[in-house]
Length: 289
Image (cartoon, rainbow, N blue to C red; front, side):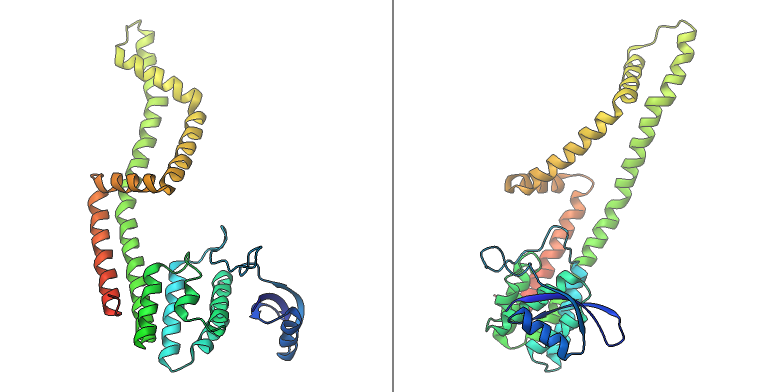
């Protein structure tokens, strides 16, 4: 069943936006008229189907869904199911409550898939960029054991713990990164401005400058002339590294470098162990063997 995005006016003349599922555009218009809304524009959502009519589980480059939003959605669904509300009605309630337009579309597509006779596991499996394999497997275990609401509650707790770990990791890395940036800036100022002024005094005294000082002067002149080239090179290096890391071999090498790093390596190893223990505990607690 297609999903339509619409803009309309309510009975008070207020602009509203939303999505709804209908067999055709005419049925979507009829639904809006029945609900007392004056339709302004309507179009079929493109995120559901590709050019061949197959379902597309990914999201666009600029369509972002934060992990916190997935966690909140999961907890809300667990609460609704725990209150004995049917799955389709619970998903429909989530569509109305969700503010993120991308997540709203995904939930509508999941509801549509469940309406077509698929399980919740199959429905969320169509969106691998939003729902990880761990998420899908835990939902599968919850459906098999008849305790989907309990498993979803554990999933929400698990996601929140993962985000807390990420936050602590960022906090641990902020200080060394900040100090490295400040140190680089100070070194740049010393080489390009302070050192030339000091050596100018010795030049006026007709003193022969030692080799290291001459090297610093040459480096200072180079940085003053070609600092823009260094910035372009640094930007190109960042882009190249990101491209390399996306490859399987590059990702493995980059992970090895991070683990061997004397500064952040120990922190990353502790985070990995904490995530492993948390993930294993959640999976075993949900019945995944």
